Image 1 (cartoon, protein in one colour):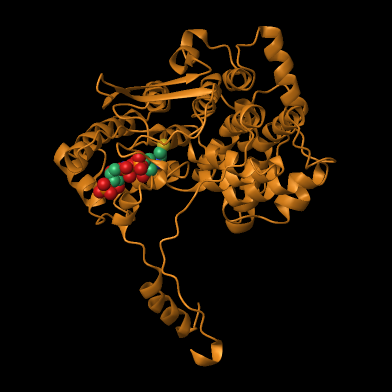
Image 2 (cartoon, rainbow, N blue to C red):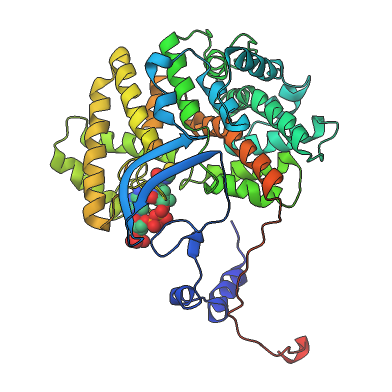
Length: 447
Ligand SMILES: CC(C)(COP(=O)(O)OP(=O)(O)OC[C@H]1O[C@@H](n2cnc3c(N)ncnc32)[C@H](O)[C@@H]1OP(=O)(O)O)[C@@H](O)C(=O)NCCC(=O)NCCS
């Protein structure tokens, strides 16, 4: 603990010199959070990778809320995720589509999967030196560390040529599942005194199958479980160029720094609870809600809890946010949450978790209604609302929820990194206006 009382005094005194009143942002036309007045995002780029549709414009140009649609390279994700079309390797297929712009033939997909599978193994001493010897208490920070360490294993790490970026990015994608699972194993072995379980990745497995097989002590999983995880990875693969962690990637890589540094920065952005870290917060919040009122609670009890959360009076929820709700673009619905709800319902039946699933459904409807009443805007459930529930059904520990988001989104970051290098490639450098006073310099002895 810092015992220096002077520091607190300096901090208090600094308020006389450093304040920026909120109304000045409007006065100077600053787009806080890079948002327009109507909350839509400021246009900062062009992309052909993904389109996030959450509202429309009427003839007067006013924003009109609508159901959300997400397109990967112009294809509605609901089409790609249709159960009757499922033939495995959905995440890899979507990755191909996002990176190369078209749907692969069977042969092309196989060849692409081979590239990933051939990169599954970690460099010789990577596991021992970086993951087992240095367990991390937060897996997101550990992933950043591991990514920056991979730089050292690359013979030409600073090469930012587009094709080399693609190769390096695919290499990172193929190694991330092992890194995340081993980082988890190392953490629980060291901090929770659990047995250390290390399974090698299998080259005949997809990304989803490998994660389940490396995570489970007996390596076993059912086809339905692998399908749900494949779908989850697919749903998180990209979300357009305005997403905070993707924009972060562009900002950092626009300096022409190495790919490992850009990816580590994106992981830092995704960790935040307003972004990818929300999936952990939702899971904790729902656990506490169920502890407090039980899954048989009445609608009145649920609404009461939602009000307590909003008023910062509910245990563990001190920021007034109902996690898993609200989105910068989506208004009436988030298509990813819709798809996830559907598949969670199917697996919940198999796992005997229908009661909890129904509670999630009821809480979802009541939270959306209450948020609309309290905030005056439509706030739909977002991708993070059901993802924790889905991971829980798959027996995936909470520590890995956000790292799984990283594993999946790595392809989106890579695709946008490459697109920016190819078609924009200017250093990102916006402006900030100086609004302080000018002061005379006073020599130190006279102050
Ligand atoms: C996602 C999120 C960051 C989007 O933020 P945004 O587009 O900037 O939304 P805004 O901050 O403009 O929201 C407008 C108002 O609604 C509030 N709000 C937004 N989401 C809210 C939520 N989930 N619970 C309670 N209030 C919320 C904001 O605090 C703000 O209130 P104010 O006007 O009283 O300050 C925000 O909805 C959020 O924090 N959600 C919870 C975290 C989450 O689930 N993140 C995952 C996103 S996929």
